[in-house]
Length: 600
Image (cartoon, rainbow, N blue to C red; front, top):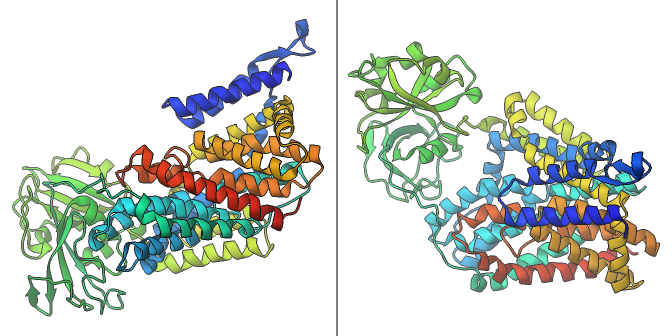
């Protein structure tokens, strides 16, 4: 092993240690490592027999021009379009019912999530499903700790079923296209990923109820003195009309309570779970701000005040704001209707909170007092315009509070289906199909240009790009060849043993660092090993894809594991108890099935 290879492997070892034992951001660690490899002096043909850098500037920057990385960036926009229209909420609401047993509940979570994750980046899918499942558990009486690990594992497994299921697959596909004359199609990995899904989910359904802990969620709803009173209407044509309160999901809402239903001039103060909703019903809720915000985004309900539809700005551009009424405010001592908020502030009062008091009567008839907290819907510039106003003591914007564009959800879902179809049937490259879908999401107003721009997670892209640069350093320094020689010396000339070694190496690296970084760093080793054995690279590429995602043993191994760690109230050992058998099962399935589908 040469000095350059030793330097690269030492840097890689340092990266692993930094990622495992420090709180420094992964993108900062990887960029620093890449920069070091560009400037470290090494023996060469320069002055004094030395030259600067194991990695050239061009090789380093090429990682950020990778096609897989660009596709990941564009897919952030596609997912944002689905999120902002409520498309993902609509998909999830169709599959979560009221199961009678824990196993049926796990199945209702796991199989749909695996299906969605095959075509959507699994991180936003899990992010959107965690609160939905937590609320669902409160309504069904199930423990979130029994369902959130299956949620993460199902998303991971689903991501192995298509080329766009996870960014890992796209990164590997980009490296295969870059370094060989091979190419991976949309569903090539499905032949291996689908058996893994069936084996993994079968294991969870059979042994999961015993292995998974039974703990309450650590994110319980705390008492909040700002209990808002909110009115919503069931409009004509609503999907909730004809459903009972329980089926509609409006009973036992976390942090929120359906106080009464006003119908045809009468008031039902005791609203039972079997009460059937009708078009035109006026529903009065009392709850904390987060629950009120979710009600605002719920499909099938609209604000009771028609003033929201008379504001100047388009509704999808608006945000929710909290504002505290001051003593000098002209609205103090007047009802909301008399305050004429739309004309005075170009804003509409959605809900009111008063020191935990449950306010009675219609929203427009509530007489405001100094200190009342108002939930306002207005254009994004509202806070800036009125932050120095004496009418309000305090103004604060609520994050992620734009009204959902539910009417455009079918468009967003159709664009997703079209993107998958174009890539699956070879009409377009995956990047081109995703780019077209992203552009159409903006043009059809499923999301705005600002939302699209903000949706891109630059830290993820930087991690991928920097890891690609380090992977190139492994290749050009000869480090990959040295590691490949070591693997071959242990595995001999048996391609199956080498495949097992590559899978194990990738899987162990994934448990320690990010999955994208792991596959980028192992791929050059597999490429060199395949060349030495004079066999096809394809089975190794597929194994790296699966191993890079199939990280179940620790919460650090995959981002979705870390996402469910807190809400599920888990301990580190919970993942070991369930994840180690999962790792072994998926690894065995992969190394058995892959050579049958993709011969050496």
